[in-house]
Image (tube, rainbow, N blue to C red; front, side, top):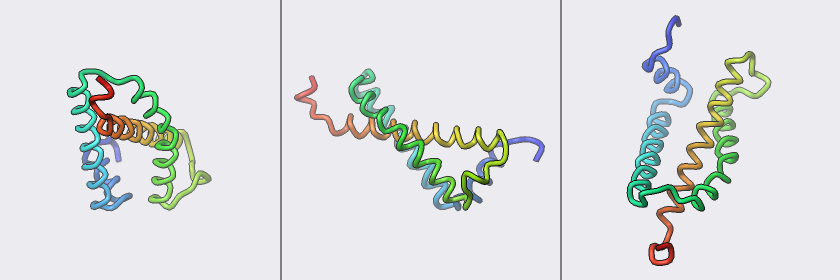
Length: 118
C-alpha cells in the first residue's frame, strides 16, 4: 500500500468491524453530530454547565473506544508494535472521548426543561 485513500480506510474498517457494524457506527455518529448541530442552532450558544458535565464522560468514552477496538481486532496491549500503533490507539481514545462528550451534551440539552432554564 503506497498511498492512503478514503476507499482504503473504508475497506479496512469494514474488514475489522464487518460492513453492518461499520455502517451502523457511521450512521450513529452522523446522527449525534446532527443532533449536536441542532442543539447549537436552537440554543444559539454552548451551555457551559452542560459542557462541563459532558466533559466528565470523556475518559469513559476514551477507554470504551480503545477496549472496543481491541476486542474487535482480537488483539491486546502487548500486540502494540511501534509508534504508529500508539498513534492509532491515542486517536481511537480521542474519538471515543469526543463522541461520548457530544452525546452527553446532546442528551442534557434535550432533557432540559425550558421554563426552568430561561
